[in-house]
Structure formats: C-alpha cells, structure tokens
Length: 138
Picture 1 (tube, rainbow, N blue to C red):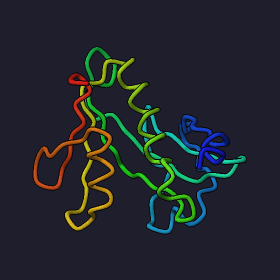
Picture 2: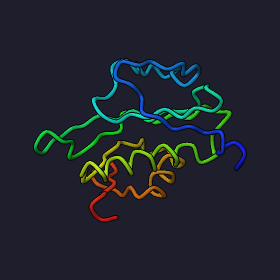
Picture 3: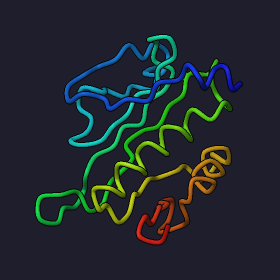
C-alpha cells in the first residue's frame, strides 16, 4: 500500500475542470457545477482515482468560514487505501490556513462505512443526517 500512496498526487480541482473520473461519476455528479474554492482530485500515475467536491456556504470578510462537502468518491479498485483520508487531510490543511471554522456533510444513515470514515477524520453528529468537522477545535 505504501508504494501506491507514494504515487498518489492530491491536487486542487480547477474551476470548471472536469477530470476523467470514469466510473466515479456513475451516480450522476456533474463536476462542472462544483465548487467555488477548494475541491480536490486524487491521481495515481495521472489517472483520477478519487475526488472531494467542496463549496463554501458562509463567508467572513470575503473568506470562506464554513464549507459543505458535495461529494466524496474513490474508485472501487482503490478503496480502503487511505485515498479519502488523504483528500480530507489536504482539505483540512488548506481550510485551517484560510481560517475555516467548520466543514459539514450529509451521510445517509445506512452508510456505516462512510460514517466510520468521517468519524475517523474528526466529523461528529451535528443534526439529523448531518456531520460537522469543527476545525477550530483541532
């Protein structure tokens, strides 16, 4: 697994960019409509293996204060290899440097794997079906 991670590149997704996500977009996510600030793509050897689509939902003095996770996906062939964790790590580093206080997302109640991943990152229950990662506590 460490050999795979040594080839992993996490980079910001450019505004309007639609990377070749292949099977990852089967759920109908239109990445052209994503984000205003801080979405990320995970690539191995130049091929997209995952993405994290993010948008700002509140601002303070023109800077993002709260973010919303629109979607997180990792290609089935690359799951359980810490790619989602690497995407969130990159987002968290950027968000803290920008002064973001919280990141929110919605997880279906029957998705135990997604809930476990998000709790490992630092998300906690916030409201029905919604989790929050409070960056000002870390």
